[in-house]
Length: 357
Image (tube, rainbow, N blue to C red; front, side, top):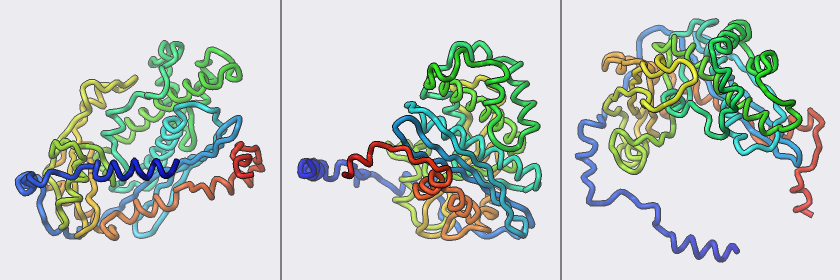
């Protein structure tokens, strides 16, 4: 079989097409990318950053899943906040989407604690808030009819009440059971049960997003990768175009965007669609990667220029040090999963052991 794949690879040589050599790259970059020296800020401020991670081990009857998040605060000293848990989840097609929602909840709760408890001036989020809002509705499973009929003010009030008390963990399981939102015993159809969990976790995530956006002037969302191609309109991401054709420290044209009109939200629809995002790309150091930056408010050029200086202050090798540290601290490796399984004394076969005989 491998020989056949090698032949296919030879046949596909060059199938990922480069940009046409006839393309006038300079004219594409003109007025959209500006080589400029990025200085450091001389202001005093506190800043924090956060990231999350999840990993899983598949067994014959279930999935062993670990999810966590961490925030790192710098106000002259390094401080940390974290939240995590382990889950036993059945075999479902939308497992990654479910775990991603759990991770987002932990990330947002850590971020809110950093902002509220430590009163940080700025908080850097790894990823895209605009992207999360553009794809706010779960795709892996249909919204159960009983839950759809209960997406009302009573459910919202119960979420908000419990979230005001609980700074850690997930609150939706308590709400699900207290309000009897599942219409059958969970052991009868575990897949259906997880469909409820997916949509309820999404509601919890949206409520937390709405809360953190009350502090929008403090939020800086930074992405290392992005599929967005609105700046240049090519069939490759803008970030890839800039990585290929620019090398110097600098920044892109600043764009202002809003959530797509067709985006659907079970709650806070008008609020989310009223937010104007400021979007731009930066390179903090010559020959390093381009980063995408989103600010969840309409920022002026002067505000953007000053903020870039602050992002640059604590950056190493062209990337914010606190974000990099949070990522390295929180990542859950396969080795970590094995260690957790050993501690939990879980030894069920995955059936792959048979294949190694």
